Length: 180
Image (cartoon, rainbow, N blue to C red):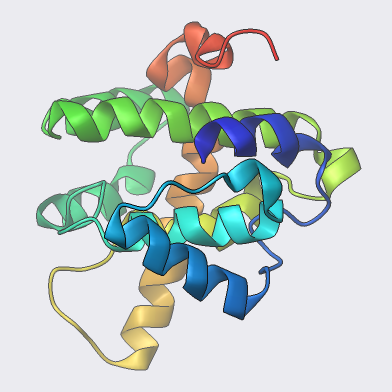
């Protein structure tokens, strides 16, 4: 999924914002969940993006770890960008290795899409609004007002992560998929 999103996302207007066919999404999700081989390259990239966001939402405790939720949210309250980046790097050290590897690929994809935002209309802000709720959620449910405020904060954090991903994850993040 990430490879397809890396290849097609930068040239796809509204990637992660538009959803594909709900029927196709449901059918493909059932096939993937049952272990059936699926050729996503033959499907709409919007369905693939929806499947990927669904995959992220189903990671127990979230990929950024709901246990660290308060710490993630407070990162943007730090001083300058350098301090924020160092705080993020310290938080990443507390995540399971598999989560860190997946995050590097995710932000490699998001960076590639953001670099061509004039073409796809998905700048860091737009990408963050679409993907942030799939990356982190609080450990306990809350009122709609508190949840809305939380989503704004996590979206700002994800926007910062996208804009600074090379400094956070390393410059090689741009070549994780090789040359396409």
